[in-house]
Structure formats: structure tokens, C-alpha cells
Image 1 (cartoon, one colour):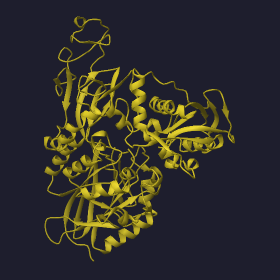
Image 2 (cartoon, rainbow, N blue to C red):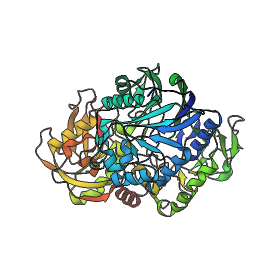
Image 3 (cartoon, rainbow, N blue to C red):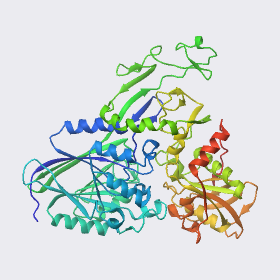
Image 4 (cartoon, helix red, strand yellow):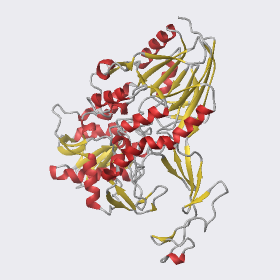
Length: 580
């Protein structure tokens, strides 16, 4: 069929949104900035639609839900689906986190969603997930007058996704080599009359050089796939706007921090121009005012507030940086994009149902336990957050004989305090609108934000040689980040990141001084999560012929540990030591 028709099309793209219904908050030396969140994104997308006469389609490359923050995960991601439909999502594909609820749970969410799921390289996907999944491409028409151009969407999932989710959660679904599958699907779509072919791909960039050239899996895919006009990349937290092999490749910061606007002009069935702009979804900017002096009484402070022996500096006693800021309850704020009240109303029933369970005060911590960054710190090295979680795991499992504990950095999805927003604003938090810390107050919702997966804990025997092999795997991607990077308790590892991969472990010593040798046949008891124990994140050396029984969920263990330890002492570091 010959492509035909003339139209102007705008694609809005999100990257790995993962049900981020509330805004992300980023603080630097001068300001705290909120990004995204469902209601703020709704305002941005309404503005984008109002600014053009184009047809506008919102698309993403998978992971729009799964391993979500509490406001969505507490209701098995129904709020994320409703939000995405309100935003106008038209098409997506499958990422690793989409399988968080397993085949049965994912199928239920697909049946609830009105938008389209498309896959070009998953096998047996229809049998497992039902007839609403379109293969190998989905075609829709755009434009105002007939004949209308056809736009085809392909969906690609990277092969390594199978190792990023708990074994069994993919059911009988397999993953075909993506380049060959995409080339075949693109040819079929063109033969069906598609003027524009867009690939929604759950693979992304590792980084971007000074000239804007990306590196990583998306580059290899774009170079190998032909007959495609636009790649909507996903999975990683990197902003991309590049042309590779004649195709436009776009990607955003994750979880709604940014989005892209792709403009395509189609004339007489042919794409005559295409361009993209990456944008930041800034909500509110709150200025960081100068630190206050020491005090013992409120009367010693110009603001009249003395907290933890320091004067709280606030406006209007201290001027805001410039006239673009307004003084709101003592804070200098600038609203860049106000949240959409209609979007807020969609979430109101869920917000009302949440506090009873998740707003219970849990513990006090004397510092922030951070995660994230580029690359994500918990995926390249030891972090206090990783130490804390591993300590909690080992403490719970020591009565069962555990001597060591390992958790994977990729399982830590939020810091402490987390981005969860409890209703009680008198709590001391690291977010605007709450009392100032440190110390900080933790609630139950923080723990489900930190670890939304619901993994159970396992205690099993492991030979010293297998422990070495597991650690070698955990360090193998350095200097690149890896979800399987180990966070540990009960022992110390010296490693050499400059050595060849799989030859980086220098020594392993238990806390009691016992040295574990590379080929050590001795057994010791390991506490870990069932995901890793079943070979997740590439830990194939840990797979058991008969899986060990599971104990409590990691979330339960963390809640009990923090509650019993409050105020929580900072964990002792120095567990993962780089050889000098």
C-alpha cells in the first residue's frame, strides 16, 4: 500500500515514568526544585496541546508503571493507569518494571488501560497477556483531512530485561533479538502504508558526550534498524536528542523530570521534516536562604524561630533572591507551572485512603540516606543507605544462622526520607512544606517507597568460592553502574576496579576475622532477597536446584528494624574498599 496524506504531528514522550504521581524534589546550594508529578505534567501537556493545531500523541517506551511509589503501588498501580489515561497516553511497550506484578497482575492492568500496548519482539505475549497487546506494530491515522497519513508504532524490549525481573514473572514470554524483529516489523508497517514509523524501545543511553552524541544500547539498536523515523528511547536516566542512521532518537530524564516534544511534518505520504526539543517539567522553585546563627531562644532569631540550636532564616525577615519569588509561609517560592486541579482530583480518593496505613511514624534518623545521581551511587559503590538495609537484613536473619548479607543496589528505589508525602506537615522531612530537619521523621510509606518490589528474604548456605563469584559479578560492570552492584553486611571486601572484569576481588574477610579464599570450599550462611537468590540481575551462580524457603518481606524487616532502633545510629562504613 502506498503511503499517502498530509499532516503535522506532535509526539510527547515520557521516559520510565513508573507511576511518579508526586513531584520529584532536587536540592542544591541555592534552591529546592520540584519536577514533574502527575498534576504538573498535566498542566504542561495541556499547554503543549493548546499551543499547536497538530495532532498530539503521548507515548512512552515502557515502565510507565511497576515498582512505583506508595501512592500507586498501594493500590496495585490502578492510580498510575488512571493518571496515564488522563494525560492522554496513546501507546507504550514493555519494560522490566511492567512485570512487577507478574503475568496475572500485568494482564489485569492491561485490561484496565485504554491505551495501546505494542510489542515487536516478545514471543507468546498474546497468550500470556491477552488480545489487547498488539503485535508486531500498531497503526493509527493522523491529520485533519483525508487521505490521512498512517503512523506505525513498534515496541522493543531489550533482551537483558529477563534478568532484571524476578524469575517466573515473565511466564512463558521470551525475547527475540530486537534488531531483526524491528527490521521485519518496520518493513511490514511500510508495506501496510505507514508514512511514519516510530519505535518505542525499552533500552536507552548510558551517557551523552559534549557534542550531544549518546552511547549505550540505544545507539547499537538505532544503527542496526532501518526504515524507522523516530526512536523513543527509555530505561535509563539520560536526556538524548540525536540523529543516528537517519532516525531521530529522543530520551528524557526519568520519572517525569522531563519530557520531549517531537515535531513531524508529513507531505503526500512522506516525512519531510522532524525535530525534537527536550524540556524540564519544573513545578516550583524554593530558594535556599542563608544558614542561621546559633540560638537557644526564639527571641534571639530575626525570624522568631529557633530549631535544633540554629535560627531558622525565613522571609520576609530575609529578602527573597528577586522579585520572581513570593514569600509563602516563610519560604521564597516561584511557581513555574501550577498543578492541574482536575488531575489532582483524580488522585484524591487514593490519597484519602493512604494515610491510615502509610503515615504511621516509624523512626527518627539523624541524616539523609541518599540514592540516585548519574551514575546512581548505590549501583557503583558502597552507600550508607545500602549499609543500613544490609544491616537490617543481617540483624533479622542472624537468629537463622546468617553470617553475611547482600542486597542489590538496584533494589533501593528511594532515599530516606523518601519522596513519599505524609499528610502530617509537622513531621521533620527533607521536602518543602514540612518541618525542618535533621533529624528526620520516617513513616511506613518511606519503606515502601525505598523498596517497592515486595521481595522476600532468604537464608541459605553458600560456599566461599560461590561468594567470590557473586562478588566478581557484582563489580563486573565498573565503572558503569549496575543494578546488581552489592551492598553488604557482616564482611569486608577489598576490590580493584582497575583490574579486568571478573578478576577484581582482592580479599574477603568476615567481621569475626575469618578470611574467605577464592576457592574456599567452606560454607557460610547468606541472607539475601529472593530475586537475587533466584539468579536475578545476572546472579546465576546463586541459583539453587531446590530454592530455599523464604522468610519475611524485606519491607517488613526494614520496618521492624527501624522501629526497634530509633533513633537510628548511622551504620559503620568501610565494607567495600577500593584497592589503592
